[in-house]
Image (tube, rainbow, N blue to C red; front, side, top):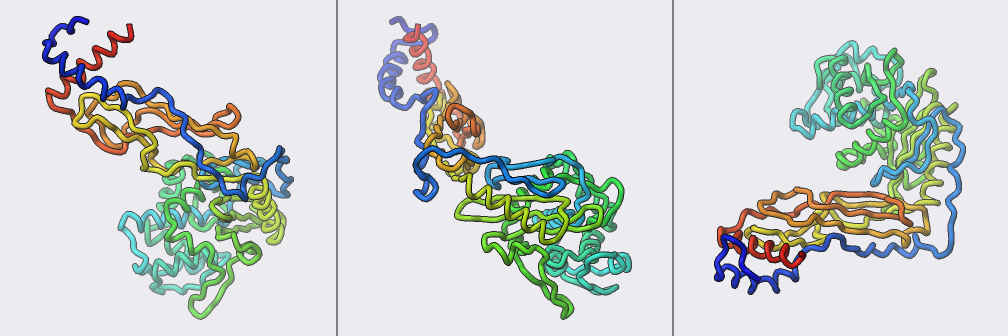
Length: 408
């Protein structure tokens, strides 16, 4: 074989001497990776048909897996409905974002205005000109569903409740809550204040994922302020030990609503019912949804994020090997007893060239169940690789030319 134009016999000799070693680390176009074994308790043998979801006595409902977002049951989930105090999930989310940014702290204090004190409906029982810690106000909103506490937080964060509502809508748009519009922080009835079960599921997933350190308050069964103890209205916190949130709501227009979340083993489900007929009914219907999801589906973490799944050959860089993996943990939700039917394939891009930054995409991980795509996630670089020396780039150029020649 004649050397390519621009290369000396010396360069070709060096290239040939490295070709054998280099060929051992060339990335394959597609590589099947083993699906981790599932716990025995979740992989019972035999055929298994998933029954249809239960009928739920509510205006709207949805059930989904927290980790994957897979919808397990729904009805009328995109209907725009009055959310009542489910609004306060967004109120707390906005406050949590302010705390995360450093613009607000749990031990900061807010002054209760006359407007906040006069707000009708459920109360934390703060008084005009009281100076209340943000942490106490948050618990007053989450556990006691205090409308006075909601307005106090809104005014402290944004100056007035209307501006705070704009912040709520900005966060809703960023999260992809496309059928939601907020007009206040407490959920009292007003025109053009609405959301959907699906949008609330998006919000609840974000809240639990982004603020696990604050989510603990949603499982708290009671809170005492100013010597007044009030119980959390979420009956499932006492009935089901796996339920750890989230929020109740009720107005005459909205009916009785409940967003619930439960964690059993490593599987977390979120269930939402809107427009039931009583406090008991919203608890019963949510429990029915949760039991259905846990009985007939299973959820697993297949691969850990930021951990190498494959090593690819990188050309013309300071290093020859590029570790590839996922930006975050990869979870799947499948019908129970079908876990072993899954197949995972790593697809790696051809001819990866330096320089490479952490997070650059170079393929995908495709998980299928009986030939149907379950989930597809980007395969990313887990480390940066700078351009190699002139000598390294010349050698890799020669190797690539030889590969092309061999392929002809």
